[in-house]
Image (tube, rainbow, N blue to C red; front, side, top):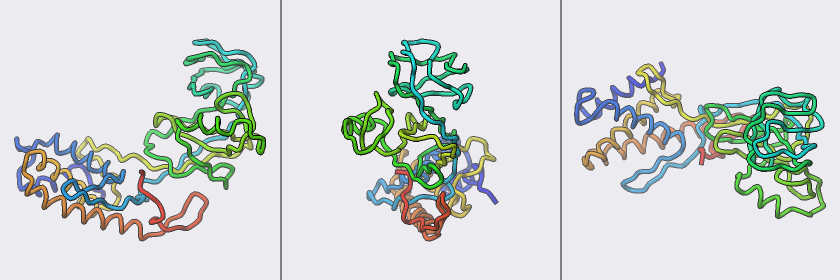
Length: 306
């Protein structure tokens, strides 16, 4: 049976040996702490604040999910785009959705319609873009996104991830190198060694660079953010009931006691909890799993979200 917020609440007050929602240990604060505890565990933030001991940060398989996107070839502007302008002109918009988002030189731009050669209903042009500037599509990340673990293009090619802030310097370092032809993604087209890669922006958008169109899907393997438990019937994200019960309420109670100055009781609870979290990670990481290409591997080769 799935563990609910009410189940965890009952356990937390049993640990305290107090009735639910007594003045010293308020229910709303306790449930807030349990949501924070689950997020920390799933994000790998598992550190004993008393001793400084940490748990190894491996990936938890029940957080994994996959999103699919249609590959869309980059195009270029055929006329200058003016600040706060309402249209963008290109040679052909037929490959693009009728309403979506675009990426031009670090600028996220939204449009609501298309003609044969224009994007219309445009908002968000923050500075002038010259004719010839590259226009790429921007993908919305899933609403439950926490962290990309890999991205597969053309069913076989795993794209490299780059931090958004590093992209300009990376392109600039390769500018003028003629070994491999690539396509402009930050400024005018140039030659360089930069291979296809992707980045995330503001935890909202996925942006791909140097991708050619081949009508294949792009597959993103990502880790889901833990569900926030608000109603008493909401189910914990930690999939195994035993581990959910042995980890979430204990760390919440520890933090509550620590904040109240009850350090002795808190220290006993944190050591028990740390042992349970270690056991949970060991359990999941001794099991094999399958990657997006169907290749079997051991979870211990991965990391948890950091």
